[in-house]
Length: 117
Image (cartoon, rainbow, N blue to C red):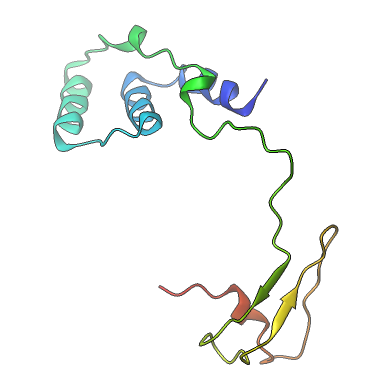
């Protein structure tokens, strides 16, 4: 079973309001205030009228394209302005297996994992 088929099967077991939200997300439809108000109304009144209309299939879930080769991060270079990393340095990763980055405290290892906010 594909991941998309497994997700579609799982979402079919969820409450109607969750199915509605998931369906909207899959279609790229905005979830506006009116939709949220309707979901709240349905929850408060116990209405479950649309449960049968929301049968999602694997093809309804985006991102299911087959990928022949996995994406790999092989190198970071030209990193500037992050912590104390020196300009012009290159950090190279193995194409397979595990790359271990080691060094003394304060040598800049964690700078490569820093995300600006």
